[in-house]
Image (cartoon, rainbow, N blue to C red; front, side, top):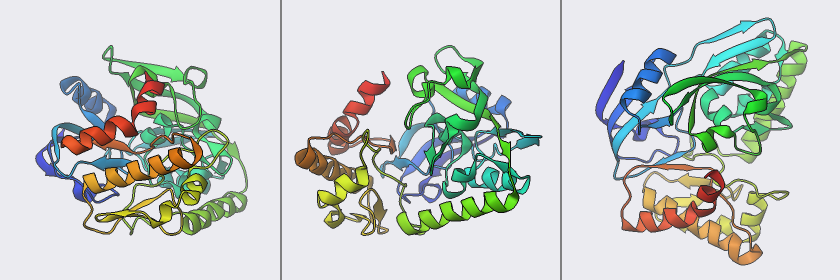
Length: 305
């Protein structure tokens, strides 16, 4: 399998931030992926790096990127896809077959693995609605296991993957037949919503920064806390929606973490609500970044134990 040393990862991240990674592995099949996970048991796994902030100081460990694992099959209404396949590509492929259930993916730049891992969803649809089963690598036992929907413990932005340290290898979905016109109309609505409410990836960002608290909106809480005016170094909160951070091209990982902490603190001070991050952090931490991450991720770590 392809292995790169001292790899400049910055260009692959949607935030366009990050230093050199000591070792990056690009598996092309489930067999290669499981081999890489066994060879590098502590490796950080990513799909399209759309919700990951990489340290400006780089990462001294191993990173496995699944971008070359893009095979999928469509048999009747049953669809099976490898973890590295981009959600929009699968959404468009099943739409051409008149299959409904994955329209929401057309507006997400992430991969199937990441979307299953976090039970991605939008516009009344979510992974849990069509997911049938999947293959996973259990990092605790070193075994490949198959789990059904009932075993996934899906809930808002989470699944059993975080609780059992499981890595998604592939996923099978059961969709329903609908007219292509109806499906494509819904996909166009989803795309229009994204263009209106979320920044283009031409503006370096990692999507939603914080998860919505139960029965509430992180974006609304942040806006009412004045977050749209926040800027630190080369990072600022997007003027059109307060739950997005934009890198103006000069932001460091410390700038972004400081801004995230300022946003989180503003909501806590104004509403008494601790909002949890959606963004994962990868890499070496300087002293200040270590301090910030302990605060930013404290509730999330407790939840996932």
